[in-house]
Image (cartoon, rainbow, N blue to C red; front, side):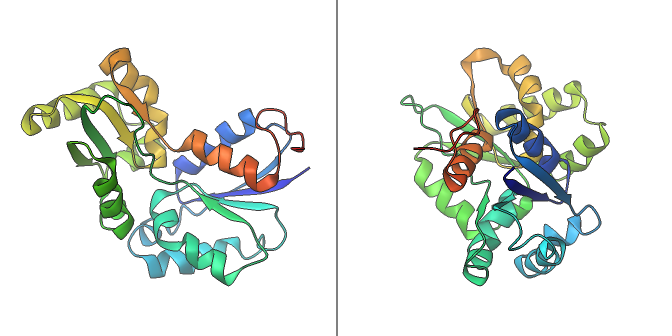
Length: 221
């Protein structure tokens, strides 16, 4: 079996690993979640690289693919790891750009860590839409602990949308934790609002890196 390592510092990595296993059941998925250094990894690129490298050292060169299930780590450190470990394949969760032809208002749910990166400023510049970013640094920990309620999600979003005078036609999830909220967001906004996350794109990129077809696990011809 192809050995794939999924790395993160919280439940978002577990969620992505579950989706990857569901889509590609023939993979041997190793979940490496560094809960202990979660705050440090999210604080700055130097610490992110230090603790990520420390956690992944036993797997570098021994896995067919290592996936960063973390937008901040992907934005700040993916190139670093690819340059340093040229014989190891790395991919990461990248910010998903909206592709709807109808340019309605865009609500972005993010954490402060990702919004401070150069990648995020470039992302905002290229989406070519009226957008507002809501930073939700407490939500990942609440999702980890199962404490984030549907009512809290709804009230927080309604307050921000009203304050920002936003009429969202799409929502971009800029944190892997938030992918777990898609059913809740769908129940709040209905089918008229398009929800973008990075999961499907990352799985497609994993298939390409491993040279397999999604859902079958068979080698591409």
